[in-house]
Image (cartoon, rainbow, N blue to C red; front, side, top):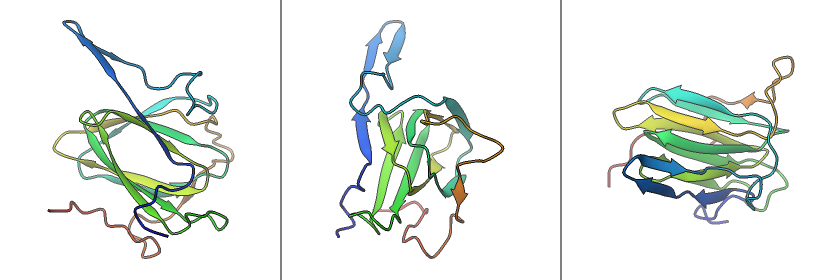
Length: 156
């Protein structure tokens, strides 16, 4: 399968800022959106430039990410045995310059790196609330050789 294919179950919703002299309003996720699954909780993560938060996946929850401040580079890797896109890597850039909602399906390894010179704020709307007694989070080091992805900035 081509590495340019979108991983099965990954979806993008382009967000729109409604701008006027006061600033802007941007809806991110609505219960009547086709991309919506269910609400579990919402949280925000502040991330310093250059910090890599990767890799992990979930067995129970779907993540919905929006970056409302700064910019992040997101890496996704499909390691699901039963997936037609097994082995596919995707990369997305989310942030103020590209306001999108990214849906990350169950079982897909994911992570991100804040790029640029300012911290980023990432909002997540997972479909399950966090359970500290039994966290639904399975980790792999960001620099594992099992995932063909490079977190460095690519100079073109």
